[in-house]
Amino acid sequence: MESTISSSSSRSISPSSSSSPNSPPPPASVTPVVVVSPCAACKILRRRCAEKCVLAPYFPPSDPIKFTTAHRVFGASNIIKFLQELPESQRADAVSSMVYEANARLRDPVYGCAGSICQLQKQVSDLQAQLAKAQAEVVNLQCQQANLMALICMEMNQSPQASPPQQSLDNFINTPFHQHFPMSFLDDNNNFGSVLETLWT
Image 1 (cartoon, one colour):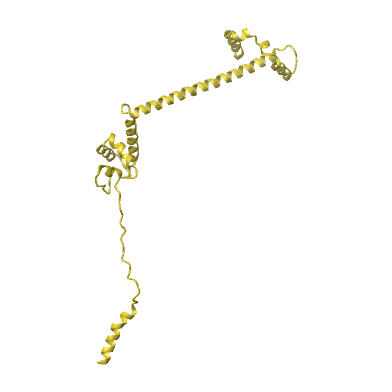
Image 2 (image 1 turned 180 degrees about the vertical axis):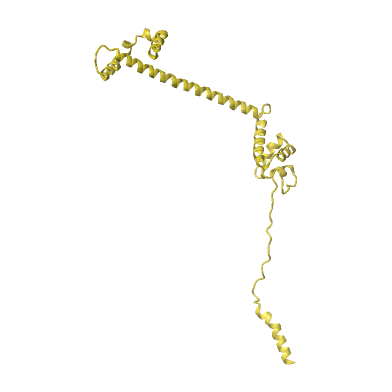
């Protein structure tokens, strides 16, 4: 009987002896809470943002002005309808176009983005006209240079002195301009044009 009591007492004491009184309890498992912020469209419309909200990818909560601008011009129902009719690959470009047109419409309620397009087209036309004018001036300067070289060569060939070409060129350069070409000759555009026609023919 005594042996049975001693064995039972040893069994009852053994679990308490194995565990330390200062050991902390095991930590409880904490599940992280994920807070999903609604998109800017659903927040402005004050509705629940669904998991597959068609507006969420294009109107993030960090940019509410983007949806506010488009909503003022097109309306939320029309924006949703436009996006649902388009494939997903084209929706981002469609949203950018709607936001751009809405901003233009708010700046210019009469013409909207058409006014901006007309203004840009006018700028392009003005720049093209300036480019054409500059190209014409370049061609004119090239023609003047070619005519001057032709007159120099003609003066060198008609020189009575049989001097070397370099000496004739130096004499032509050092001689005053009015001695080669009188002012009356240069003022007469018809005579000058006839000389140029003779040179080119």
